[in-house]
Image (tube, rainbow, N blue to C red; front, side):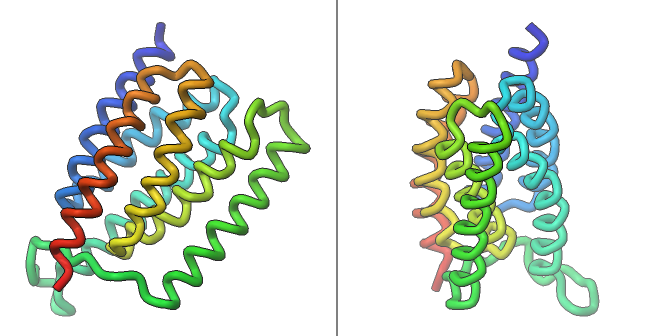
Amino acid sequence: MGEMLLEIFGAVSGLLYVWLEIKHKRAMWAVGFVMSVSYVVVFGIKGLYASMGLYVYFLVMSVYGWRKWSEQVKSEGGEVKSEELRAVRMSGKQAGVAGGMLISSFVVMWAVLRWLTDHPAPAADAAVTALNVAATWLLAHSVLEQWILLIVANALAIGLYAWSGLWFTTGLYIVLLVSSFIGYSAWRRKIH
């Protein structure tokens, strides 16, 4: 019962997180931190180790993202330039970093899960995690294309979490998939 309540809490905080992400609001990072703590426990109980590790990564990235977005809205003198964050298109350098993160994190996680654990779905869990690792790094830099990685990651996650019997989390990821399309469209309109 406690596990299910924690999963429900994580799913509800995840809905708030994605709404704030679509709106491009810094508060998203604080909500993401709380959601991440919940899911570290939930995925640990279910034995979805890469997903659990992903949420540990999200904890760290919540602090990093808050700082990066804070820099974006403040001038060098520390005064607020604008409350509106600016979405940007991915640069070649960012594409290289994100691609490297995606490939290396997938290979390492898949190998660890495949050969060192009793994980029931190592490739799927590693893929969802690797896509989110790269997407979250791009999100911290307000890069529009992070939404494309999230569309793929969320679609894969729906299948993985449904297969695992995490129904509230599956529901969350259905909403996250739809929200990824909405977020992409909303952020794309912000780019001039």
